[in-house]
Length: 80
Image 1 (tube, rainbow, N blue to C red):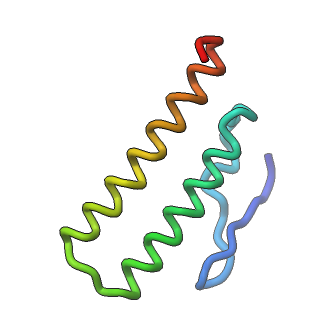
Image 2: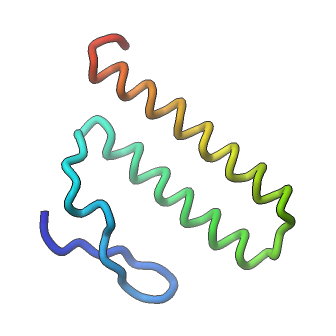
């Protein structure tokens, strides 16, 4: 794929997904959840939130991605 970089608060970093062959049906979902995860990390870091709040936030994010990923996989398999 090439040299793809992500911009973050500290500059540019190599994209860890750059060498993966990601099906088109999953690209939008992956990008949305990467953005959500980056935002969550920034917010939690700057807010100094409790362990309980971190666990709750991560649970919501992971459940949302799980549901979206399952829909995409079913669709790719012709079941959705």
